[in-house]
Length: 460
Image 1 (tube, rainbow, N blue to C red):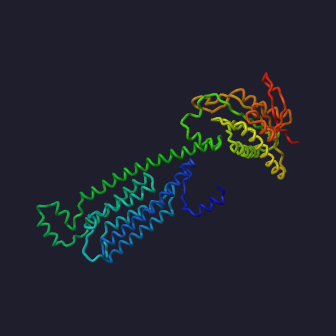
Image 2 (cartoon, rainbow, N blue to C red; image 1 turned 30 degrees about the vertical axis):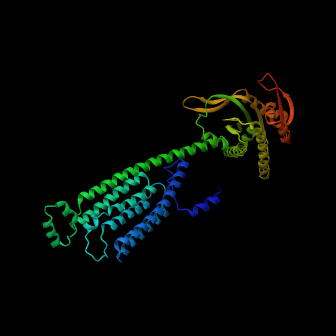
Image 3 (tube, rainbow, N blue to C red; image 1 turned 90 degrees about the vertical axis):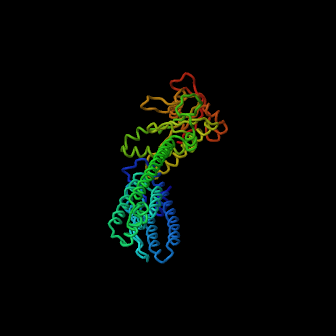
């Protein structure tokens, strides 16, 4: 994604800010941002739907003009949900917590404070105790879509604080209809439970305690589920990071293949592999006359261009060797096209270098010459090293011969040398069409038998 495209997309989205000091895994960071954005959007849609249902329910229950009071409160809930969507972020946010507490406070007012516009006499105690507490579960349900398990407990404790506050208000409110209440108290003196239910000044403490205890228990269960979901999100982000790390060494198609495998990558085995060594001619002399920072920047650009060619031809980047690379075709699994891909990859690398040299020439920089050696055959591959540090390695005579062929390019003035084994596996017609020419047998340092080679001559 280009910077301009990313900026355009970001302008369309709310600012979900991430605390860089708290999250060092960019895949987890991206997952959290995506999860928070989806949760906020879903919560706002659910909130609007639920509030429309509640508004219709209020109209059905009240059936007079005083319902406008509740419709006004419902409008405030909608406005607060929209504000949460706008300022939502990953990590700690005092503004977002404040809006969450506004939700709970509004709910406390809605279910605990009598409608000031209704005509009939109604007390705080009566408003408080008659089955209004379940509306708090709407706020709790919305919070489960957005917030972390820690914030869920903040919802529980603040709801407790609001509900106790309404209880104290109702408890100390001046009694209403004291004469009628006294007469009813005498009539129901032998039925204390019934009297507690019908007394307009009773807050029914036992029922209130039951409501808040059940609410906290449910919050704890939902918080535990939120914690479990976060753990799953972290594991998914870690898997994404591991897959991205694989993508630094393997072609994207192989990354998908490896991600679906249950067998370990490092199982020691023998198989036929094409090995390629790539090196910059005269790099040491180049580096002696340049600044270290520029040398590093040069190598980064070089490696980036080379790895693109490697992955485009389904190769595996085995390792960087300073100013060179070791590349394999046929790891972790072999294909019929490994040799063909290797020969074509070498040509693509040289073409890439030609394009880069054209740019460097315009900038007045020195030309860069590349030498490549390719050989194939059976190798041993698997994890080597100690328990503290393991490395997936390709070992065998094929590796040594490939390295020697790369060195041989300097002696015969070639840019690419491939062994007869590679050309036979790819097909001589393909090799000739690609520009490879049969050179013949050559002695290889450290090897008793000569190797028949094909080469692409270097342009002078």
